[in-house]
Length: 70
Image 1 (cartoon, rainbow, N blue to C red):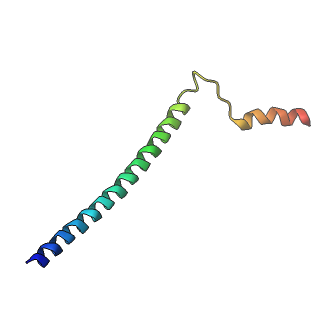
Image 2: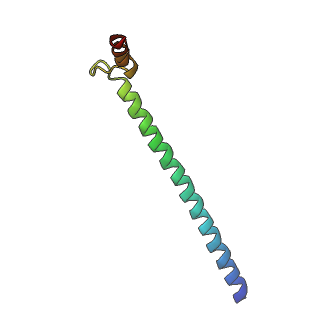
């Protein structure tokens, strides 16, 4: 009887540890997705502000310099 109880407890503990590891993995994946989403939203919000900030692409700034050097 004692051996059966010990096996049952070992099985339950093993299952609990496996469940915790799975939860940790899923939680880590969720956090990464939320961080990526936050970065994407930040980039979108930055691109929506050109009316308040004058942002010129680097290529447009280089073109006049190339023309002046020729």
